[in-house]
Amino acid sequence: MGFATGGSFPASIVPMPSQVAVVDNYIDFNNLAGGQWAQQYLPELYEQEVERYGNRTLSAFLRMVGAEMPMTSDQVIWTEQNRLHIAYEGVTRAADVLTVTGNNAVRLNQTIIIADGFTTVKALVVDVTGLTITAVPYEAASLNASGLGTSGLKLFVYGSEFAKGTNQMVGSIEPNVQTYQNNPVIIKDKFEVSGSDAAQIGWIEVSTEDGTSGYLWYLKAESETRLRFEDYLEMMCVEGVKTAAGSGAEQANYDGSFDDTQFTGNAGGGVFPIGTQGLFDAIEERGNVWQNFAGAAAPGAGALGDFDEILKQLDKQGAIEENMLFLNRATALDFDDMIAAQAGGGYASTQAASYGLFDNEAEMALNFGFSGFRRGSYDFYKTDWKYLNDATTRGLTADIDGVLVPAGTTTVYDQMLGSNIRRPFLHVRYRASETDDRRYKNWITGSVGGAYTSALDAMEVHFLSERCLVTQAANNFVLFKSTV
Image 1: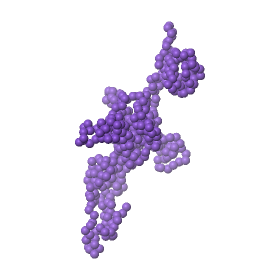
Image 2: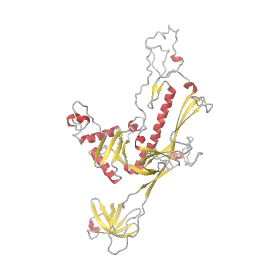
Image 3: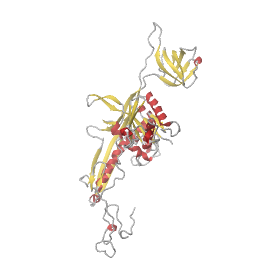
Image 4: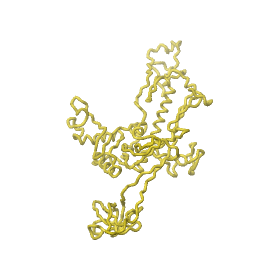
């Protein structure tokens, strides 16, 4: 956008938004008649760049809650344990015969509890054939007389009972494990400046989030490219999704063209693009999703009622005692209001507030925010997640409100250390070997800026990484989403 002219300087002079010597912003010493050098109201220049958005970087989340580990393959595979006890939902009944779906792991002479809403019946298994279980109740003549319905039943095994002098249990249960996989993706970026622009003088003073400062405008642009790329490394691990069969992404070629037929290969080998599963997608597929926290879609439910339902779901999963809440601004305030309402009746008056720093003495400012609290048997540590508030990332959308991340760890044997260590549930895996480390590659090409690798009259700064996120035990995570 150009500058308005007239009044403060002649119309023949147009100040440039950057310090570039062109004919339009040249002041003629001899042009006194035109008033160029006689002007007394030429604009004053601030050399210092104004940091109006504060710290603009977003990458910090995975550094706080995850661990980084190298890998050498195109794919990472891990296994997770299944439930220890045997239970079924969606069971149907015909007289004393129960039918389950999937694999039937219930065995003869086991004792089971059959539930129909709040009605529960304890019974003994007297026959097992395929997916059918014949059971007789302990406290009624038959299952027909026990008050159970015929569909939508639930059951679980709680023990067994055998007569004296009988054989041992028939059959055994082989534990099953869940196997999951993810694959790294290659992330690239580049900054380029021509030799002429690199030789240009008269730069403004700049300072950036990584601590660099000075009058090097083209290095300012390079540092912003670097910071943006570092944010992409985390954003890909948070937002990434796998390529679905038949999708447009599956049919895309490296050169950006689009084929009407399914793309099955490329010159580099393999299928492109395959995508990678990020945190949000992993929680939606294997974790817990809570929609419209604080009763946004169901007025009257309230934040505390919603939160207690989340706790009940955590009880059914790993029941990890310590958890971290990374929230956007609106949801963080919902949590503050929820806690405040339990400690003095909310914000109706300052006299009613019984929380805050320094016991809320009159001369002290009230603290209406909370960073940690305990509910039931769980501890929660709450923080704002800048990624969800930034106007150029998730602050631009309205569907993700926050995420609950368990602070629990898993014990694994580290071959490099030769001992057992504890690691969090989130692992950033990057490609690396003895010959090439692709965690964060950075190199310069061209013939400017100290590089003499080609005849190109420019400096090209290249960035590359190959990585993915492993989200283990996603059943302990909660994603907060909004639909209204």
